[in-house]
Image (cartoon, rainbow, N blue to C red):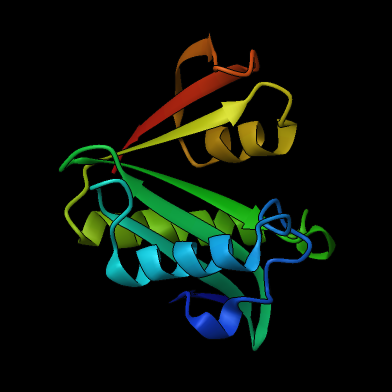
Length: 146
């Protein structure tokens, strides 16, 4: 089984094997401080660690777009992918967000990320629209009532 726990400064070296591994130590500290303070760019933000027993297998970020809309996205380390951990982590995070009063979840997924597309569709997200981001990548915007 897995668990989600708030990130702490003890997790500063746990980013290896994820999209966050290229962050500098200062960027990691800032991300952790923002999560502890539950605020990023003036909005609710929380970065959770995904544990399997006592091993960090990934992260889940939550970011509020409004008082009722939240996005959440998992990042699971390569050795733990394709085992259902991303689905479990996102399910747990969506329940957590619902308990905090959010009623709608959104997810922006790169059109080339088949695993994330499948995850969002499995969890009952509906495709709202596609668009190109500022880097020219095609993004699918998924939405789900909580």
